[in-house]
Length: 544
Image (cartoon, rainbow, N blue to C red):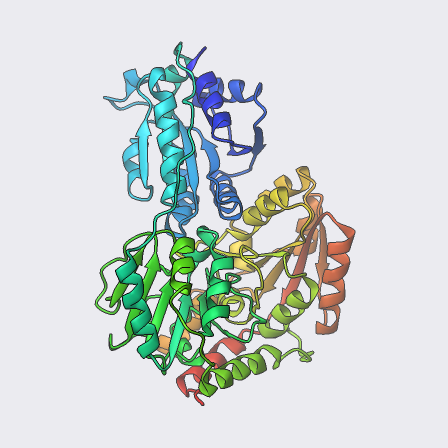
């Protein structure tokens, strides 16, 4: 068989269900091989979107999502989405075509050293220089992407894709992923926990990536220690549990709202420093820290754990529970939770128009069930979602956080609906981020997706305005014009709604979700609330 046939058989051997991407001249043999495969090839309208879709596939399934592009500009267009998966620890395998090996030592049409370019934001990557090497390369790429969640990359030159080989896929044997910390370390951790009067758990992305939400919930049930999540950890612990104190990720003293200023021990479970820098929640480096993760922490002067329980998070929590005693929640933390609940409900009856971001988020939450999925793009709305949107189950809120890439929401919503057709899926995007991958409306319509895209419309880059006003008390270079979003939706075969008053938003959203199909909802938003929040945080409005 030819190399491309072997590659596809190896992908099937890894359990690949979908490949998201765009074909090219240098991937002709590969797409020919895919045409005879049970793997479904989903054609996107931009390679960046293909990578975002593979990214979300990896988040929702814990298996590597796969994206495909040709050489040169096709490959470079993948970079943003691949880097997003890399920083948000989502398993992903990118496959790119390349010119024949005879061109790699000289300047040639569309030739770039893509392997070197991708090396910076993948866990591992390689070019296939002989078809016989394909089984080992594919197996290694998937094992690394899965075991150290993140992105890997395989480059397949066109002559290698056509090369004949007698190799077959490797026989994959199951092996244990369970690794537990030392018993003495567990007991020392318990001593730190028992000595603390105000311990708090900081649950991060790793809890969800390692499917450890149930173990976290059992740990809290058995210890009584309250929980704060990062934005990426939303849903790892249910927001309606009495031990939940909120999510933090805004720099402006957001940690105070969650009670972190009083905490004398922070138990970081699956926490990754890229989610929320320790310098914001441990500014003087004085807090005692226990780190529970499968990987060693990065070096940071504000994050020097007193103890690190390295190993499978699920296993570590199961064993730690054996030694811990249950305690009552300190009254202070109970008040923190009441404060948080009060803020969540503050705007629920607000009918001002343009709509307050808090009201839009409240209405979306009221419309979706516990396991329905919200996909957030990047912009001011992401910070409001991170702070205020209550998540109850893991993987029900998807956010681009490490790279914080605009254009994530629409492709992510498509992937989520393809994978979870039984769930309602809502994408939330700013008018700036939405237009960065608007072409995927065609993909959504072609795939008959039932999704609703809610556009926070303020005709400017609202998050940048927020930061400019905080720093300079003025703004510059953030204004633009928007198209008629209703007509734009209709031109793609989707349906559009322009919200004219706040009372219409929730019933119209409910109608769109019930009717099915692809919908755009254009909602004018009042982002004067951004600076009001900044002032509240500066004035310690949540200190009790």
